[in-house]
Image (cartoon, rainbow, N blue to C red; front, side):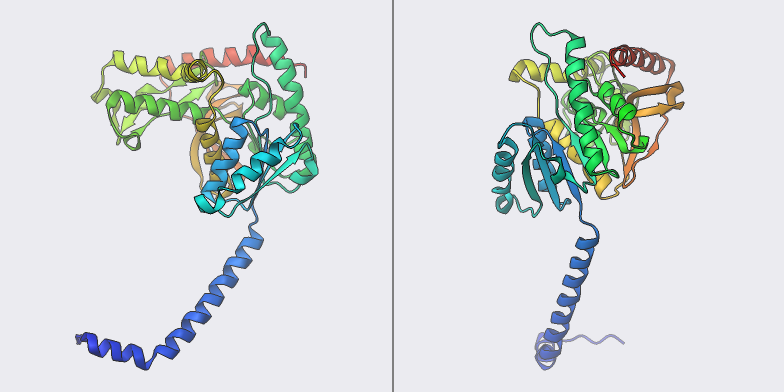
Length: 352
């Protein structure tokens, strides 16, 4: 039978065994600390971000704040720039409650050695009067050099490509780095999908946590394929709440999401790209096996080969654990095919 114990009896019991309780708690604390130390030593997670500009610094900041990485190395070619960004970010550690170490270096790839995951944000934006061929030529040279140096110092790393034109730069890394295809990921779809969900929530007048949606295809204004048919609000199709006309407007606003911000800011966005990268890095580092649309090398999936384009994937400790093939309708298949043609036309400008 259960016996009710009054407060006075309980206090007396605690008093009689207080010494034993304290000893037990001390031993438990020592054991717990020892386990934590051993775990940390065996799971040292090092992430490198190349390019300390707005996007690169945002990546480093979000990764650090989420506190899953042991160290983030921020590298830039401009003397002292990455060091300054790293110092500024480290001075937020006590305020934001993270223990990740952020180190800034100027073009010294030896400091990136042993990186589990590397993020490439390097490159230049298209300038007035610059042809697309000129932009691709310059950025291809930068990305090829950066990826080569990263792989040289961290041969088992997983590369996340952010530099634009992203699908083509991811394709270039596949062709030149020597890494397995599951270890090369283009970040575009995660950002495009976040912008899609923002526009959906806006149209629905709903909290964004209620909304789910995905964008596949190329990472460009004309190449994106927002899957409006599959978009939901708490598992209910969004078509139950908004008209087809409003949904089409959401789709068009999503496609020009980057251009809209560039017009408003006078430069490319950085908060959402940095957050998107940090989500991919965390899924890999923590083996979360979350699904994100990413630019990946296809080998028969979606009826395509030898192309990097946005498709849903499962991301875990091995990088791309699985490419998920969705059942697309005829219109979506046509949009995906058109998107692929656009990506291939840019790939053709590479000098491989």
